[in-house]
Amino acid sequence: MSPFILDVIYLIASITFVIGLKMLGHPETARRGNLIAAFGMVLAIIGTVALHEGAVSPLIYGLIFGAILLGTIVGWLTAMKVQMTKMPELVSLFNGMGGACAALISLLEYQHNLGNNMAISVILAGLVIGSVSFSGSMVAFAKLNGSMKGAIRLPKYNILNTAVMIGLVIYAVFILMTGASMLHVYLLFFASLIYGVLFVIPIGGADMPVVISLLNSFTGLAAAFAGFLYGNQVMLTGGILVGSAGTILTLVMCKAMNRPLSNVIFGAFGAAGAAAAGSDEGKTVKEVSPSDLAVLMNYSKKVIIVPGYGLAVAQAQHVIHELESLLEERGVEVTYAIHPVAGRMPGHMNVLLAESNVPYEKLKEMEDVNSEFANTDVVLVVGANDVVNPAAKDDPSSPIYGMPILEVLDAKTIIVNKRSMKPGYAGIQNQLFFHEKTSMFFGDAKKALTDLVTEIKQL
Image 1 (cartoon, rainbow, N blue to C red):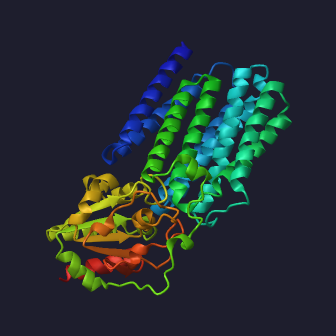
Image 2: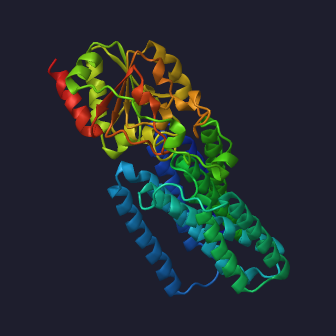
Image 3: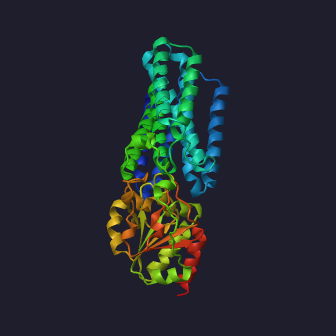
Protein backbone atom coordinates (compact mmCIF):
# COMPACT_ATOMS: atom_id res chain seq x y z
CA MET A 1 0.00 0.00 0.00
CA SER A 2 2.88 2.37 0.76
CA PRO A 3 4.19 2.52 -2.83
CA PHE A 4 0.69 3.42 -4.06
CA ILE A 5 0.33 6.20 -1.47
CA LEU A 6 3.79 7.50 -2.32
CA ASP A 7 2.91 7.56 -6.01
CA VAL A 8 -0.23 9.58 -5.22
CA ILE A 9 1.85 12.00 -3.13
CA TYR A 10 4.34 12.39 -5.97
CA LEU A 11 1.48 13.00 -8.41
CA ILE A 12 0.01 15.70 -6.17
CA ALA A 13 3.44 17.29 -5.73
CA SER A 14 4.06 17.26 -9.48
CA ILE A 15 0.71 18.96 -10.08
CA THR A 16 1.58 21.67 -7.54
CA PHE A 17 4.86 22.28 -9.38
CA VAL A 18 3.02 22.78 -12.67
CA ILE A 19 0.39 25.03 -11.08
CA GLY A 20 3.03 27.00 -9.18
CA LEU A 21 5.15 27.53 -12.29
CA LYS A 22 2.09 28.71 -14.21
CA MET A 23 1.20 31.18 -11.45
CA LEU A 24 4.73 32.56 -11.36
CA GLY A 25 4.01 34.09 -14.76
CA HIS A 26 2.07 36.99 -13.23
CA PRO A 27 3.04 39.18 -10.26
CA GLU A 28 -0.45 39.07 -8.76
CA THR A 29 -0.33 35.27 -8.46
CA ALA A 30 3.44 34.67 -8.16
CA ARG A 31 3.57 34.64 -4.35
CA ARG A 32 0.68 32.18 -4.10
CA GLY A 33 2.19 30.02 -6.84
CA ASN A 34 5.50 29.89 -5.00
CA LEU A 35 3.74 28.77 -1.80
CA ILE A 36 1.77 26.10 -3.66
CA ALA A 37 4.93 24.66 -5.24
CA ALA A 38 6.72 24.81 -1.87
CA PHE A 39 3.86 22.89 -0.28
CA GLY A 40 4.22 20.22 -2.93
CA MET A 41 7.94 19.93 -2.25
CA VAL A 42 7.37 19.60 1.51
CA LEU A 43 4.74 16.94 0.84
CA ALA A 44 7.14 15.02 -1.42
CA ILE A 45 9.95 15.15 1.18
CA ILE A 46 7.69 13.95 3.99
CA GLY A 47 6.28 11.16 1.81
CA THR A 48 9.75 10.02 0.72
CA VAL A 49 11.09 9.85 4.26
CA ALA A 50 7.97 8.40 5.94
CA LEU A 51 7.08 5.81 3.29
CA HIS A 52 10.58 4.62 2.41
CA GLU A 53 10.73 0.84 2.03
CA GLY A 54 13.34 -1.06 4.01
CA ALA A 55 14.97 -0.58 7.38
CA VAL A 56 16.61 2.74 8.12
CA SER A 57 18.71 3.33 11.21
CA PRO A 58 17.85 6.15 13.63
CA LEU A 59 21.22 7.73 12.79
CA ILE A 60 20.22 8.10 9.14
CA TYR A 61 16.90 9.65 10.10
CA GLY A 62 18.75 12.00 12.40
CA LEU A 63 21.10 13.05 9.61
CA ILE A 64 18.22 13.56 7.19
CA PHE A 65 16.12 15.71 9.52
CA GLY A 66 19.21 17.52 10.78
CA ALA A 67 20.14 18.44 7.20
CA ILE A 68 16.57 19.53 6.46
CA LEU A 69 16.48 21.70 9.59
CA LEU A 70 19.87 23.24 8.88
CA GLY A 71 19.01 23.95 5.25
CA THR A 72 15.65 25.43 6.24
CA ILE A 73 17.20 27.79 8.79
CA VAL A 74 20.02 28.92 6.49
CA GLY A 75 17.70 29.33 3.51
CA TRP A 76 15.05 31.20 5.50
CA LEU A 77 17.51 33.61 7.13
CA THR A 78 19.29 34.23 3.84
CA ALA A 79 16.07 34.91 1.96
CA MET A 80 14.76 37.21 4.68
CA LYS A 81 17.93 39.29 4.90
CA VAL A 82 18.94 39.51 1.24
CA GLN A 83 18.58 42.90 -0.42
CA MET A 84 17.00 43.17 -3.84
CA THR A 85 20.35 44.25 -5.26
CA LYS A 86 21.80 40.93 -4.11
CA MET A 87 19.02 38.77 -5.50
CA PRO A 88 20.82 37.82 -8.75
CA GLU A 89 23.86 36.42 -6.95
CA LEU A 90 21.58 34.63 -4.46
CA VAL A 91 19.82 32.96 -7.38
CA SER A 92 23.22 31.89 -8.74
CA LEU A 93 24.26 30.55 -5.34
CA PHE A 94 21.09 28.51 -4.82
CA ASN A 95 21.24 27.25 -8.39
CA GLY A 96 24.83 26.13 -7.86
CA MET A 97 23.79 24.16 -4.79
CA GLY A 98 21.28 22.25 -6.91
CA GLY A 99 23.99 21.37 -9.41
CA ALA A 100 26.30 20.26 -6.59
CA CYS A 101 23.60 17.94 -5.20
CA ALA A 102 23.11 16.31 -8.60
CA ALA A 103 26.87 15.80 -8.96
CA LEU A 104 27.18 14.27 -5.48
CA ILE A 105 24.32 11.87 -6.21
CA SER A 106 26.20 10.69 -9.29
CA LEU A 107 29.42 10.17 -7.31
CA LEU A 108 27.58 8.11 -4.69
CA GLU A 109 25.59 5.98 -7.14
CA TYR A 110 28.27 5.10 -9.69
CA GLN A 111 29.63 1.97 -8.00
CA HIS A 112 26.14 0.77 -7.07
CA ASN A 113 25.12 0.61 -10.74
CA LEU A 114 28.17 -0.88 -12.44
CA GLY A 115 27.05 -3.25 -15.18
CA ASN A 116 23.89 -1.26 -15.92
CA ASN A 117 24.94 0.89 -18.87
CA MET A 118 21.68 2.84 -18.96
CA ALA A 119 22.03 3.84 -15.31
CA ILE A 120 25.74 4.65 -15.74
CA SER A 121 24.92 6.85 -18.75
CA VAL A 122 22.44 8.81 -16.66
CA ILE A 123 24.87 9.03 -13.74
CA LEU A 124 27.73 10.35 -15.88
CA ALA A 125 25.47 12.88 -17.63
CA GLY A 126 24.21 14.12 -14.28
CA LEU A 127 27.77 14.29 -12.94
CA VAL A 128 29.08 16.41 -15.82
CA ILE A 129 26.08 18.73 -16.10
CA GLY A 130 25.69 19.15 -12.34
CA SER A 131 29.38 19.89 -11.86
CA VAL A 132 29.41 22.45 -14.68
CA SER A 133 26.31 24.08 -13.23
CA PHE A 134 27.87 24.25 -9.76
CA SER A 135 31.25 25.72 -10.66
CA GLY A 136 29.77 27.96 -13.35
CA SER A 137 27.19 29.31 -10.90
CA MET A 138 29.91 30.04 -8.36
CA VAL A 139 31.82 32.08 -10.96
CA ALA A 140 28.59 33.89 -11.88
CA PHE A 141 28.04 34.57 -8.17
CA ALA A 142 31.54 36.03 -7.88
CA LYS A 143 31.00 38.25 -10.92
CA LEU A 144 27.63 39.49 -9.74
CA ASN A 145 28.78 40.41 -6.24
CA GLY A 146 31.91 42.13 -7.54
CA SER A 147 34.48 39.61 -6.30
CA MET A 148 35.49 38.91 -9.90
CA LYS A 149 35.81 41.88 -12.21
CA GLY A 150 34.71 41.66 -15.83
CA ALA A 151 35.36 38.95 -18.35
CA ILE A 152 38.58 36.92 -18.16
CA ARG A 153 39.64 35.53 -21.50
CA LEU A 154 42.53 33.12 -21.78
CA PRO A 155 44.45 32.98 -25.07
CA LYS A 156 42.40 31.11 -27.69
CA TYR A 157 39.74 30.58 -25.04
CA ASN A 158 37.14 29.45 -27.61
CA ILE A 159 39.38 26.67 -28.86
CA LEU A 160 40.39 25.77 -25.28
CA ASN A 161 36.80 25.58 -24.02
CA THR A 162 35.62 23.57 -27.01
CA ALA A 163 38.52 21.14 -26.61
CA VAL A 164 37.75 20.65 -22.91
CA MET A 165 34.06 20.12 -23.65
CA ILE A 166 34.79 17.48 -26.29
CA GLY A 167 37.34 15.90 -23.96
CA LEU A 168 34.70 15.57 -21.22
CA VAL A 169 32.33 13.79 -23.58
CA ILE A 170 35.04 11.39 -24.79
CA TYR A 171 36.21 10.69 -21.23
CA ALA A 172 32.64 10.01 -20.07
CA VAL A 173 32.12 7.56 -22.96
CA PHE A 174 35.42 5.87 -22.04
CA ILE A 175 34.24 5.41 -18.44
CA LEU A 176 30.89 4.06 -19.65
CA MET A 177 32.44 1.55 -22.05
CA THR A 178 35.15 0.30 -19.71
CA GLY A 179 33.43 0.45 -16.33
CA ALA A 180 36.42 2.41 -15.06
CA SER A 181 37.24 2.79 -11.38
CA MET A 182 36.11 5.61 -9.11
CA LEU A 183 39.44 7.33 -9.71
CA HIS A 184 38.38 8.06 -13.28
CA VAL A 185 34.95 9.23 -12.10
CA TYR A 186 36.58 11.68 -9.69
CA LEU A 187 38.86 12.91 -12.47
CA LEU A 188 35.79 13.46 -14.66
CA PHE A 189 34.17 15.33 -11.77
CA PHE A 190 37.13 17.70 -11.31
CA ALA A 191 37.51 18.18 -15.07
CA SER A 192 33.82 19.14 -15.24
CA LEU A 193 34.32 21.66 -12.43
CA ILE A 194 37.20 23.20 -14.36
CA TYR A 195 35.11 23.38 -17.51
CA GLY A 196 32.33 25.13 -15.58
CA VAL A 197 34.81 27.83 -14.58
CA LEU A 198 36.23 28.11 -18.12
CA PHE A 199 32.69 28.23 -19.48
CA VAL A 200 31.62 31.32 -17.49
CA ILE A 201 34.75 33.43 -16.90
CA PRO A 202 35.02 34.74 -20.50
CA ILE A 203 31.40 35.84 -20.70
CA GLY A 204 30.90 39.60 -20.52
CA GLY A 205 28.76 41.40 -17.98
CA ALA A 206 25.79 42.21 -20.21
CA ASP A 207 25.33 38.50 -20.94
CA MET A 208 25.07 37.48 -17.28
CA PRO A 209 21.23 37.30 -17.24
CA VAL A 210 21.41 34.80 -20.11
CA VAL A 211 24.13 32.80 -18.37
CA ILE A 212 22.16 32.61 -15.11
CA SER A 213 19.13 31.32 -17.00
CA LEU A 214 21.23 28.79 -18.93
CA LEU A 215 22.92 27.47 -15.78
CA ASN A 216 19.50 27.16 -14.19
CA SER A 217 18.40 24.94 -17.05
CA PHE A 218 21.55 22.83 -16.53
CA THR A 219 20.65 22.28 -12.89
CA GLY A 220 17.12 21.26 -13.82
CA LEU A 221 18.44 18.79 -16.37
CA ALA A 222 20.84 17.29 -13.82
CA ALA A 223 17.99 16.93 -11.32
CA ALA A 224 15.88 15.21 -13.98
CA PHE A 225 18.68 12.68 -14.55
CA ALA A 226 18.72 11.96 -10.82
CA GLY A 227 14.96 11.46 -10.86
CA PHE A 228 15.27 9.06 -13.78
CA LEU A 229 18.01 7.15 -11.94
CA TYR A 230 15.91 6.67 -8.80
CA GLY A 231 12.63 6.23 -10.62
CA ASN A 232 11.43 9.23 -8.62
CA GLN A 233 8.59 10.90 -10.50
CA VAL A 234 8.62 14.15 -8.54
CA MET A 235 12.35 14.70 -9.05
CA LEU A 236 11.92 13.92 -12.72
CA THR A 237 8.98 16.30 -13.11
CA GLY A 238 10.64 19.10 -11.15
CA GLY A 239 13.88 18.74 -13.08
CA ILE A 240 12.13 18.74 -16.45
CA LEU A 241 10.11 21.83 -15.52
CA VAL A 242 13.17 23.74 -14.34
CA GLY A 243 15.27 22.60 -17.28
CA SER A 244 12.68 23.38 -19.93
CA ALA A 245 11.66 26.70 -18.37
CA GLY A 246 15.31 27.77 -18.08
CA THR A 247 15.98 26.78 -21.69
CA ILE A 248 12.94 28.64 -23.01
CA LEU A 249 13.84 31.74 -20.98
CA THR A 250 17.43 31.58 -22.25
CA LEU A 251 16.26 31.48 -25.87
CA VAL A 252 13.75 34.29 -25.28
CA MET A 253 16.46 36.50 -23.79
CA CYS A 254 18.83 35.72 -26.64
CA LYS A 255 16.08 36.73 -29.06
CA ALA A 256 15.60 39.96 -27.09
CA MET A 257 19.32 40.67 -27.56
CA ASN A 258 19.21 39.60 -31.22
CA ARG A 259 22.08 37.22 -30.60
CA PRO A 260 22.25 33.43 -31.01
CA LEU A 261 23.03 31.42 -27.90
CA SER A 262 26.29 30.25 -29.47
CA ASN A 263 27.38 33.88 -29.72
CA VAL A 264 26.67 34.45 -26.03
CA ILE A 265 28.67 31.36 -25.04
CA PHE A 266 31.54 31.66 -27.50
CA GLY A 267 31.42 35.38 -28.26
CA ALA A 268 33.22 38.24 -26.57
CA PHE A 269 30.43 40.58 -25.60
CA GLY A 270 31.85 43.73 -24.10
CA ALA A 271 35.43 42.83 -24.98
CA ALA A 272 35.86 45.81 -27.23
CA GLY A 273 34.83 48.07 -24.37
CA ALA A 274 35.23 51.77 -24.82
CA ALA A 275 37.13 51.32 -28.05
CA ALA A 276 33.97 50.23 -29.78
CA ALA A 277 32.02 53.11 -28.36
CA GLY A 278 34.07 55.84 -30.04
CA SER A 279 36.06 58.61 -28.47
CA ASP A 280 34.46 60.96 -25.98
CA GLU A 281 37.20 63.53 -26.38
CA GLY A 282 35.81 67.02 -27.02
CA LYS A 283 32.23 65.97 -26.22
CA THR A 284 30.27 67.59 -23.43
CA VAL A 285 27.12 66.72 -21.54
CA LYS A 286 24.33 68.92 -20.27
CA GLU A 287 23.36 68.70 -16.61
CA VAL A 288 19.95 69.38 -15.13
CA SER A 289 19.20 70.44 -11.55
CA PRO A 290 16.43 68.90 -9.41
CA SER A 291 14.45 72.18 -9.52
CA ASP A 292 14.58 72.47 -13.32
CA LEU A 293 13.70 68.81 -13.76
CA ALA A 294 10.79 69.18 -11.32
CA VAL A 295 9.30 71.98 -13.43
CA LEU A 296 9.84 69.99 -16.64
CA MET A 297 8.14 66.85 -15.32
CA ASN A 298 5.39 68.70 -13.50
CA TYR A 299 4.17 70.31 -16.73
CA SER A 300 4.58 67.20 -18.89
CA LYS A 301 1.66 65.20 -20.20
CA LYS A 302 3.44 61.86 -20.46
CA VAL A 303 6.53 60.49 -18.69
CA ILE A 304 8.17 57.10 -19.21
CA ILE A 305 10.62 55.78 -16.62
CA VAL A 306 13.34 53.34 -17.71
CA PRO A 307 14.70 51.47 -14.65
CA GLY A 308 18.10 49.78 -14.55
CA TYR A 309 20.52 48.19 -12.13
CA GLY A 310 21.48 51.60 -10.70
CA LEU A 311 17.93 51.85 -9.33
CA ALA A 312 18.42 48.54 -7.53
CA VAL A 313 21.87 49.46 -6.18
CA ALA A 314 20.49 52.67 -4.67
CA GLN A 315 17.38 50.87 -3.38
CA ALA A 316 15.34 53.68 -4.88
CA GLN A 317 12.32 51.62 -5.95
CA HIS A 318 10.09 53.12 -3.25
CA VAL A 319 10.99 56.75 -3.94
CA ILE A 320 10.48 56.27 -7.68
CA HIS A 321 7.01 54.91 -6.95
CA GLU A 322 6.42 58.03 -4.84
CA LEU A 323 7.53 60.15 -7.80
CA GLU A 324 5.15 58.27 -10.08
CA SER A 325 2.21 58.75 -7.68
CA LEU A 326 3.02 62.44 -7.21
CA LEU A 327 3.11 63.10 -10.95
CA GLU A 328 -0.14 61.21 -11.53
CA GLU A 329 -1.87 63.33 -8.89
CA ARG A 330 -0.95 66.30 -11.09
CA GLY A 331 -2.40 64.75 -14.22
CA VAL A 332 0.80 63.31 -15.72
CA GLU A 333 0.60 59.88 -17.35
CA VAL A 334 3.46 57.72 -16.02
CA THR A 335 4.54 54.27 -17.19
CA TYR A 336 7.69 52.13 -16.96
CA ALA A 337 9.64 50.70 -19.90
CA ILE A 338 11.16 47.30 -19.09
CA HIS A 339 13.88 45.81 -21.27
CA PRO A 340 14.11 41.97 -21.14
CA VAL A 341 17.76 42.02 -20.00
CA ALA A 342 17.67 45.06 -17.71
CA GLY A 343 19.34 44.32 -14.38
CA ARG A 344 21.37 41.26 -13.52
CA MET A 345 18.84 38.47 -13.91
CA PRO A 346 15.65 37.76 -15.87
CA GLY A 347 12.76 39.85 -14.53
CA HIS A 348 14.99 41.79 -12.11
CA MET A 349 13.26 45.13 -12.70
CA ASN A 350 9.78 43.60 -12.52
CA VAL A 351 10.53 42.08 -9.13
CA LEU A 352 12.15 45.27 -7.88
CA LEU A 353 9.20 47.50 -8.81
CA ALA A 354 6.65 44.97 -7.58
CA GLU A 355 8.33 45.23 -4.17
CA SER A 356 7.37 48.93 -4.09
CA ASN A 357 3.77 48.15 -5.15
CA VAL A 358 4.02 49.63 -8.63
CA PRO A 359 0.88 48.38 -10.48
CA TYR A 360 1.79 45.62 -12.91
CA GLU A 361 -0.15 47.22 -15.75
CA LYS A 362 2.28 50.15 -15.65
CA LEU A 363 5.22 47.88 -16.51
CA LYS A 364 5.41 47.78 -20.30
CA GLU A 365 7.62 45.44 -22.25
CA MET A 366 9.97 46.69 -24.95
CA GLU A 367 7.79 45.59 -27.87
CA ASP A 368 4.78 47.46 -26.47
CA VAL A 369 6.42 50.64 -25.26
CA ASN A 370 8.77 51.53 -28.12
CA SER A 371 5.94 52.96 -30.20
CA GLU A 372 4.99 55.27 -27.31
CA PHE A 373 8.28 57.15 -26.99
CA ALA A 374 7.46 59.43 -29.93
CA ASN A 375 4.48 60.81 -27.97
CA THR A 376 6.39 61.12 -24.70
CA ASP A 377 7.45 64.45 -23.22
CA VAL A 378 10.11 63.14 -20.82
CA VAL A 379 11.96 59.84 -20.54
CA LEU A 380 13.66 59.38 -17.18
CA VAL A 381 16.42 56.75 -17.40
CA VAL A 382 17.41 55.64 -13.89
CA GLY A 383 20.58 53.57 -13.69
CA ALA A 384 20.09 51.92 -17.09
CA ASN A 385 22.80 52.06 -19.74
CA ASP A 386 23.24 49.34 -22.35
CA VAL A 387 19.50 48.83 -22.95
CA VAL A 388 19.14 52.44 -24.20
CA ASN A 389 22.47 52.69 -26.03
CA PRO A 390 21.92 53.88 -29.64
CA ALA A 391 25.17 52.16 -30.66
CA ALA A 392 23.07 48.99 -30.88
CA LYS A 393 21.40 50.55 -33.94
CA ASP A 394 23.98 52.94 -35.34
CA ASP A 395 27.45 51.49 -34.77
CA PRO A 396 28.27 48.23 -36.58
CA SER A 397 31.59 48.06 -34.73
CA SER A 398 29.88 47.99 -31.33
CA PRO A 399 29.67 44.64 -29.51
CA ILE A 400 25.97 45.30 -28.88
CA TYR A 401 25.16 46.14 -32.51
CA GLY A 402 21.88 44.50 -33.50
CA MET A 403 20.52 44.21 -29.96
CA PRO A 404 16.98 45.63 -29.73
CA ILE A 405 16.90 48.63 -27.38
CA LEU A 406 14.36 50.95 -25.82
CA GLU A 407 13.91 53.74 -28.38
CA VAL A 408 14.27 56.60 -25.90
CA LEU A 409 15.73 58.93 -28.55
CA ASP A 410 12.25 59.23 -30.07
CA ALA A 411 11.06 61.14 -26.99
CA LYS A 412 11.13 64.94 -26.79
CA THR A 413 13.47 65.06 -23.78
CA ILE A 414 15.73 62.43 -22.19
CA ILE A 415 16.94 62.68 -18.60
CA VAL A 416 19.60 60.18 -17.51
CA ASN A 417 20.28 59.61 -13.82
CA LYS A 418 23.72 58.13 -13.18
CA ARG A 419 26.31 58.47 -10.45
CA SER A 420 29.06 59.12 -13.00
CA MET A 421 29.95 58.88 -16.67
CA LYS A 422 31.38 55.38 -16.27
CA PRO A 423 30.25 52.80 -18.88
CA GLY A 424 27.55 50.27 -18.06
CA TYR A 425 27.96 46.61 -17.15
CA ALA A 426 28.92 45.71 -20.72
CA GLY A 427 31.87 48.12 -20.48
CA ILE A 428 30.64 50.25 -23.41
CA GLN A 429 30.30 54.02 -23.29
CA ASN A 430 26.84 55.33 -24.21
CA GLN A 431 26.69 58.06 -26.84
CA LEU A 432 23.13 58.83 -25.72
CA PHE A 433 24.62 60.87 -22.88
CA PHE A 434 26.08 63.37 -25.36
CA HIS A 435 22.95 63.74 -27.49
CA GLU A 436 21.35 67.18 -27.77
CA LYS A 437 18.08 65.83 -26.37
CA THR A 438 19.76 64.40 -23.29
CA SER A 439 20.47 66.02 -19.92
CA MET A 440 22.38 64.24 -17.15
CA PHE A 441 20.91 64.12 -13.66
CA PHE A 442 23.96 63.05 -11.66
CA GLY A 443 23.87 61.45 -8.22
CA ASP A 444 22.86 58.37 -6.30
CA ALA A 445 19.41 57.41 -7.57
CA LYS A 446 17.73 57.41 -4.15
CA LYS A 447 19.07 60.82 -3.12
CA ALA A 448 18.59 62.39 -6.55
CA LEU A 449 15.00 61.18 -6.83
CA THR A 450 14.25 62.24 -3.26
CA ASP A 451 15.47 65.74 -4.09
CA LEU A 452 13.31 65.71 -7.22
CA VAL A 453 10.22 64.65 -5.25
CA THR A 454 10.87 67.44 -2.73
CA GLU A 455 11.11 70.01 -5.50
CA ILE A 456 7.90 68.82 -7.18
CA LYS A 457 6.01 69.03 -3.87
CA GLN A 458 7.06 72.66 -3.55
CA LEU A 459 5.63 73.66 -6.94
